[in-house]
Image (cartoon, rainbow, N blue to C red; front, top):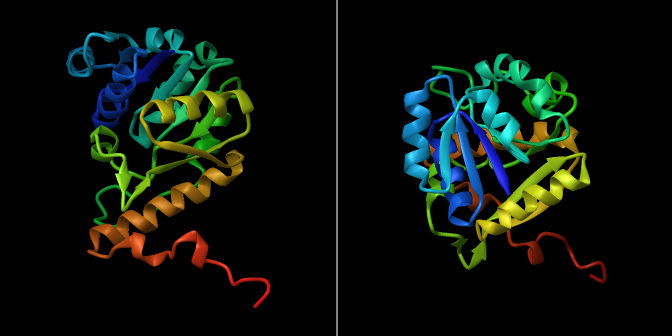
Length: 216
């Protein structure tokens, strides 16, 4: 698959590296061409650097790995090139410089969809830090890590599901794009608990213990 990445930070490097390792072709676009080149080099020979517009035009799937504050402006510039493309939203809108994991706004994925209405937006990869996606570890406590996806277009969900599977992770469709705000809120809550020293995974029992037996 051809994947365009807009941005050159940690998420661009982590997800781009994983997809390149699975055989996909990557173009990294950023305003800072030096950073784009550095990220493409780190990803490997399946990646090359370009401008933002070229990255958007190249990708069958496009990952805007950008700070939330820059999303609307950058995507509006390349909006026509994203028509019909799968747009993977991995962002969280945490309050800047607050020291707390609180959302400054919800429904970032829906705002992206409103900015580029011709694209098929899928919320994914926002629950974990770049280090998790960059790691080769895929199982925790004997279970493959799940990656929830929220989106309205079946073809886009299938495309992102394939990219998740290529990373040896397990995708699942968690609902339409309207559900994405709950993924964003979950990230703020869970990450805040982790940074507070609390084990978020311990809050939930295994599925077989979740519901009472109807016959009891």
